[in-house]
Length: 106
Image 1: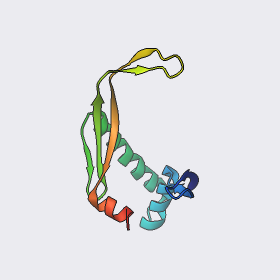
Image 2 (image 1 turned 135 degrees about the horizontal axis):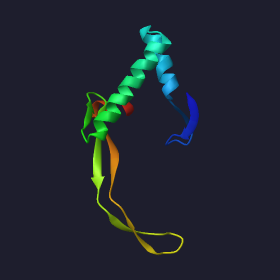
Image 3 (image 1 turned 90 degrees about the vertical axis):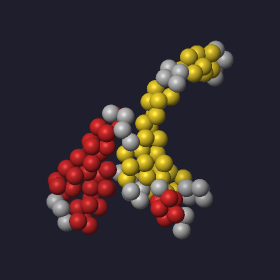
């Protein structure tokens, strides 16, 4: 895992990369690295396609990914103070399940 994030306590935490996820599947399940890579890619492609259609992704025991539409709004350029319109856009939100929240706070 890569060191690059500070935890709430101020010390560095680890970041799991896609390559490390593939390696973990390879080691734990016994698939070849190619099979593990193909599975991870397929899962991510499926999640992405589902979200692009505006559908919700619910992973039991983990959480929900939802695409939300944000309305246009007036913002301000912090350097000039000039008001600008921020266009509408879609944003991805994640809400962890109660199971995940409980697991994180043990």
